[in-house]
Image (cartoon, rainbow, N blue to C red; front, top):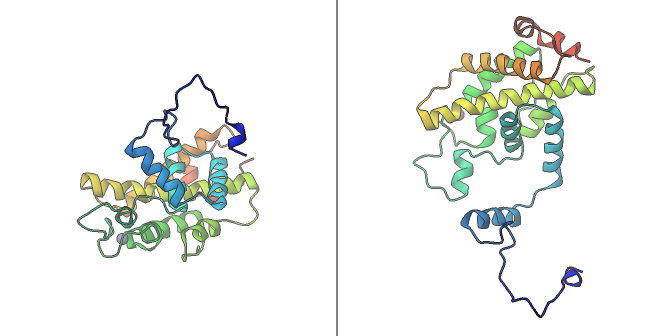
Length: 221
Ligand SMILES: [Zn+2]
């Protein structure tokens, strides 16, 4: 079928083309991407996750981080080590006591747990499933929300995840610290900024948002 589309010509010389780059030229980067495509083909569930996240219309950096977290492609130390990157340690940058996997960084790490605990108390969710990152995401919901309101709710989850990843990077690259209270305040501010950015339907002040996020989301049309 592929060959039937090929048109042979006597007037043109044969050339070699590297098919994994638009330029047709080989590069180490494109070889690496090709390897990733062949070794780890994108599963439809990953596409579904991305399609859903796209509807949230959150900030691009939050969207990218969340997507990578949900499909297990965030460059944690354990992930990098599996790809052959040599590092001094693969222990978690935040607690330095367990291997830095995706699951550990965003759910099990003591710093992440404290952030989730503050956030869950703030927004009024009693608990979420802790066994896997995808079920954590899925169980982060409230009944009686419209589909538009549920998207906002998932956007808050995405903001929390992105706000956990930021200080982790700051520790690794700038000798920063993971200040749990600061991360929590950043979640409140960033999620409010995002909701204001989405459009005029969200008219609440930052103080309203901090005091009662649930009422703010429930009144979103
Ligand atoms: Zn940790």
